[in-house]
Length: 424
Image (cartoon, rainbow, N blue to C red; front, side, top):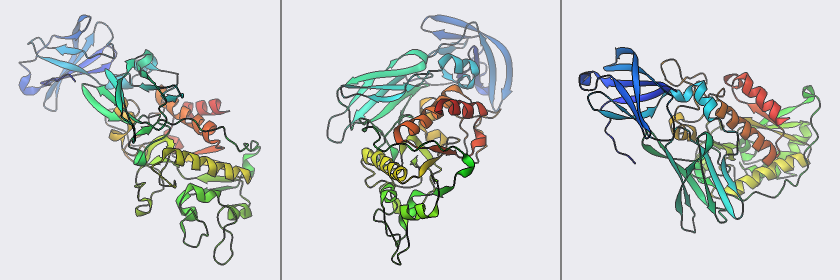
């Protein structure tokens, strides 16, 4: 990693606009004119605006040509001082969105002979994937920058069961992050896991529901539905409880699946089952959470699994639960939370592409329409792609029948319509 002392700062705020911030007590040391130093030459910067703000002098500069990405550039003051060019508000502009949109597959794409890792990190100057295994030696592989800001590497061999994280370098700082597209994770979601695909779904899908007004929907929290000591179910608080049949209370009243069938409902709506924060998966009964603290959107929550340490177990038990409900004529709706994350600054989104996936106000601060401190910027093309890819994955891989979107009003209408078009 390059080491540099930032005595002043410079940010790319538009494709050809660079903002330079000079501490007030250094104004006579680092003076205009400024120039952008790249690996191909020097680009003059013309100051278009200047004012003092919060103990600093702010210079808005226009570059003669657009800034390029993927390599570290530097801004030089006339007094000789140099600082690295950091990625600023440019990441939230329409030209950036258009220039770096990528329509291909992301994440860990497994085959028995190799696995291809691909992560979208257009502002990064370097990236690597670190592999580890509980029983084998690990290794770190440098990734290559491809088109549209995607970093990729193909690792030869059967990587089933390998854990992995990405190392991403943004603004000269290396950050470890879980893959935003991780389909499986370790206990408490600390790492992604490469898994070979399961066999094709064995249970046939139910025929499409013809008239929505005939739907009778039963909302359910996986843990709550079976956790009572008199539920008569063996796998209390787990996915597997919903696959049990013929369960009763001590007094002979139906519970579980039998109870649902007697009610005459047509759909089961499950509160979030993707990986979320708030419950330690190793001690799941020590805390309680509804599941609206999303961590990893593609991977199932481990606290409902019989063995949270085995990522394949949680994936398989979710499928078995859904298949069992289907066999008994019940359709499954997932409650999904694409409007916010648990903690913005610690999310894979922010660690991979800082500032892109979240909305900000006119002062550059995270907006808070959700009331939880962050709002997903669904209107941006790669955020829209992420949400759509995730919905399609649950439809195809887990054979779910529908979704209930939490705080749908936070999402933009075009994203909603896009998901509808893609999922039909």
